[in-house]
Image (cartoon, rainbow, N blue to C red; front, top):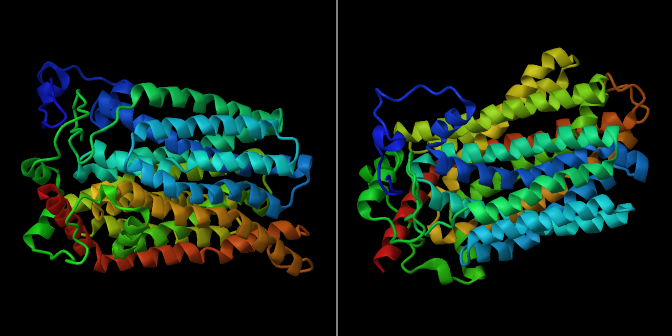
Length: 514
């Protein structure tokens, strides 16, 4: 039987020789092979589903916005507030969750978060007014706060360093599938039956996920003893930290190149003792002293700002901009999501591929270039008046925007000691959540301001007398600057990434020796 610490052969992975192995064409077998075996596939699927919860809810608000406007008489600002409140509350809750992630059983935290999410969705469906609905979404913020720190920490301990980009690409596909579920399922249910049913229906899979995580997701040992090589069939939940031979095996070619070039770590940031017992304040101060980490945190937050605006108001924008039906606009959103799915898988593979070819900053390059390409494609698509001509550009923009995620998530793990992964992700998620919380509100406010100042304007071809739609269009155009700025900031990390990665390695070695 292959263990988690061994490099399996083709025979060990399948139990038969290559010559005798039949060619399987089933979808399940292809997924199993692409993920590195059934054990790894199970873990990847569960983690992807956890991420899907958060985006399903955010997208659902955008999908049922029209019904909420009609039934509850909400404005763009109030709709933005409904999407903002869970993220803002999650920003506060993320900090203690990050501390717990580094100290307690992470799988239990994930399961508890999914259970609270289920209860919050049911309560939202029962809400009878805007104020009540707003209150029920506070609990939703607590639930979504658990995903970021726990998954970041678990990925680092489940999978080898050299595969983090690919692995993150597969896990982050859950965000996109969750967004699609929220848009399509919730939107159709709200239109055909009731907006309340949309909340109830999403509560069912989240309850099933709670049980699946509790029963099927194993807790890995911290420090790498449980990392699963492709083809592993046995999970090791306890054991010593990685030895030097296996640490060297897990490194990418880019990391080995850093070693060969003797890139010096920052002596002021090399940890000499185990940081697990660090107070939250000391850990936070250390995390923000790692320059690459701070750059990537800010860049990622700005990117999520625009993405959240699309989730919340994209359907309204497309129906008004191109004069199409709700069904056609939903199809367009689906095509953008399909492009994003390709991008998130391809971006992780490209980032890891560059690293394996010796490009030290490969993950940073992929992240920065993706942001800039997404901004350019969105700009040209929004300016165009023909949906037929703009549609391919929207798909390219979606793919480019998603491609940056796995690359940057992997890069952040590269520059941080494993015992700080939970708290480092909590700091990132705190800023991201604050930005994401303000995004729908700022999009809505800016759209309303622009609408009121252009009521009699003849600009914005295709909107006619719909000042609200014209204001939303200009808000999307103006706020594209956040995507471009994200790309420039990310490329700025090219100066710091190699040194910070070397510092993290030196810290791991020093604390292991201590």
